[in-house]
Image 1 (tube, rainbow, N blue to C red):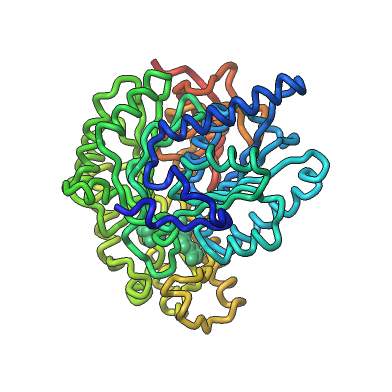
Image 2 (cartoon, protein in one colour):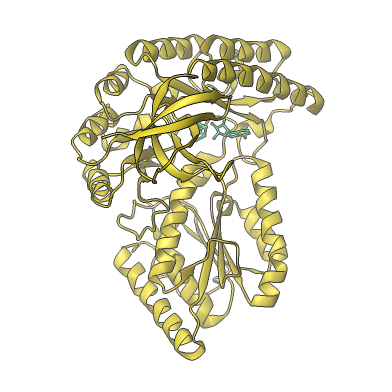
Length: 490
Ligand code: 5AD
Ligand code: SF4
């Protein structure tokens, strides 16, 4: 596997080759972390204050988990987290480039920090998918001078060393590895929640859907060893974790690169034996790889939640082919039928792209039709965004933007109606909810999720994060249910 040789360093000039390259042992990472910690201890002794950090995360759950790792590293290095947007010495952006509007928002947020940087001397570090693109690096170098440290998706472990370099040399450091390295285990992680946690099982993606930039910025599929995953989950359980979400761009291909078939199903069975873990979720599943063995595992494993996120992207076979999705609408429909036969009350959610280049009215009608047929519990809908370097970006999009917006509106209305109707059927029922704390929409209520991943806001005399409670649903809408809390489940 490539390591040092594939390193692309921006801005390190003629500096001696970075010692972390090709030698990514986290022992070395710990050394750099200790150097930074010493600098920070000296600073605290001199000034009486501790340096602070803040993290701004964009994009998917993998980025959420990366941000927990970065928080873990910063704490190791002697920084203290601020969560209320108050000034910080270092602000880290964990970025996403799946759609153009994410990139624009990130540049907007970075630009808006100019006065905090000037007044408070804050510095910005940027990492994640967006940083894997050379044109973004050039833009940052030229126009965003408050960004002092940049690293990519493959070298998150370099962060302490880069921070040390910045703190001691005072110059901007850019280090982005072009290719993936082996997986680094046991980086420090500061979990955002105790009662639920994300667990990466496979990094990267081999699918090259024609619209998607992820394979270019996250590299090829690399599965973690099953023993490492199980040990991590056991440690989480020992620490009070009740629900885990297994993460990967395509969890269904977990183990393929280790030469094992259906290892993901085996992993689900193995997690059944871990005491303390009560719920298991996973995302994302690719329809082309959803095997019968996996559906059986979902049926047989009592901890696996009654929910699957199964992106369909389009209901038109012609567009699915152009998207390089490698399944047909008929195959997708047959999978949903199999899932519903195996797990009768399973909730199915999806992702849909509207306005892929060349999408005709007829293609779009096929998408509406599959949405009506499947009746998704939830759908994340996106307007197609051309991504530089992907095959689809080279196809001319002749559909006028107004027509695409109209299609998006029609799809959203259809989906909201379906989700509302499905939710209404839950009124009067009592559902088990894992409590997440106070509701964001309504702070005098608690909130939590059902096994089907529905958000429930509810009133109760007493509820606590991590409790399983029976909640009676009194009102239901497309996006959240309202309930009244009853008893804690034993
Ligand atoms: N344009 C719009 N949506 C996209 N997605 C991925 N790439 C693009 C793009 N170029 C959507 C897909 C994917 C989800 C995470 O983001 O629906 O499943
Ligand atoms: Fe992107 Fe397709 Fe891979 Fe998902 S499976 S990350 S959409 S290339």
